[in-house]
Amino acid sequence: MNGISALLFSAALLAATFAARGEPIERSIRVGADERRYEVDLPRGAPRDRPLPVVVVFHGGGGSAAGTRKQTRMSELGNAEGFVTVYPHGSGPFGSRLLTWNAITCCSRAMQQHVDEMAFVAALLDDLQAVANVDRARVYATGISNGGMMAYRVACELADRFAAIAVVAGEMTTLDDCRPARPMPVLVIHGSADRNLPYDGGVGVAAFAPHTVRSVAAAIDFWRRHDACAGEGETTRSGVVTRRVFAACAGGSAVELLTIEGGGHSWPGGDRLARFLDPPSPALDASDEIWRFFARH
Image 1 (cartoon, rainbow, N blue to C red):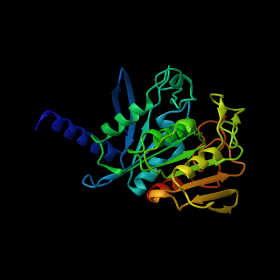
Image 2 (cartoon, rainbow, N blue to C red):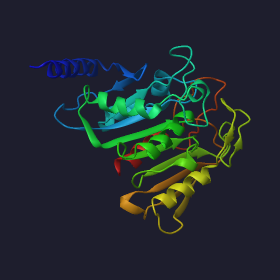
Image 3 (cartoon, rainbow, N blue to C red):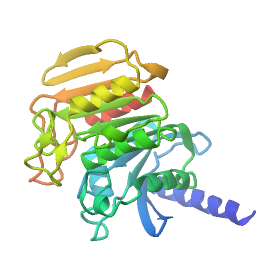
């Protein structure tokens, strides 16, 4: 066994051990001059000989991998549905606290220092092969707030690595420079009363990193055009949730918007991590909706 094979074999054994215990696998990779980190949750009992889908979950500004795991309960869903859940760490001045992502117009230190997030995500996906049997055709990205901005970024810049994205309470900061290499299935979930990233755009009065926000409609219009979606879509309403679906799009893609009337800046159906944060809407379970969308693409 050569050195590389031995390394991969050891990593596989480590991953199997952590998966059996239900513990996160912590990984550290070098990206340029920086050391970046991410965590992996493997679905318990999944066969090692079958390639598995992957859901990458980007935390919000000032968040963490652990907090987002609790907030979204995505790993619990991964155990039930058989997908790998990945939680990347952003960067920040205090190590594991107040982490953010460089989403071009937001946020904080990551934006100010022009952190190369796309190099990190690409390196993460390469490194992930050492700990999980990945179905490369079924790698997905989602996130909330600043993490939702990251989901938009990977759709724009790494469309060859991701099959679909879902954005919760996020903003498409890369709207003017987005050049995806192919049609991209996109799901957007946003509350109409979001005071951090306002649904109709403007500056959020409760924003973590105040800046002029692009509207949800602007993002949906972009993806409708890029994916060459035909018609005006189908709109339905259930309680406070309005669902607008554009299904007749190029390459089997789709664009879907779930608007929660009166919903705030939160992960619907998830955990509230702190009292100063908006309470999650009980009108839908965002994680369930996201996996439903991903599983179709």
